[in-house]
Length: 161
Image 1 (cartoon, helix red, strand yellow):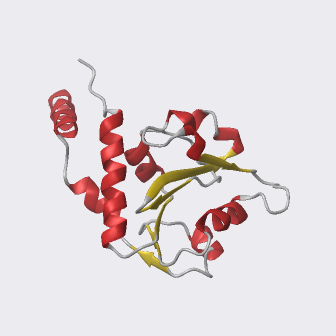
Image 2 (spheres, helix red, strand yellow):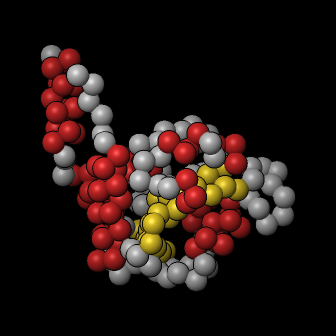
Image 3 (tube, helix red, strand yellow):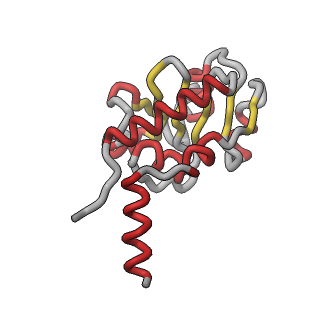
């Protein structure tokens, strides 16, 4: 039997994060690490130097901002509706269409913004005008394993034994 995380579980993870964002008093939580985006959506990608972003607000559906090149591929992301997968132009981007501009456009005036402890400096440098707060929200989510995750760990342990 092939074990996999269901679409419903990915949605539950995103919903739990939205609740944590609300409880933390944040207007927005910006997810930018490969591991976290994969954990929340099930969509893998090869980021190289091009950043990917998942914007999570307490009261609205999450938005995924990806390079145009990866738009079709990222439609496999569970818990993200296709219309909420937005793009930016890769380097050299036309004026006002690169990731920094598109990200600021999507953030708008929301304050304060939560970011992961592992957020890259090039990203925080572009967001200096916002009130950023480092919050380990996804790390807290990952501490509690679902029944499927527990079975996956057990299976992996059997293989390694």
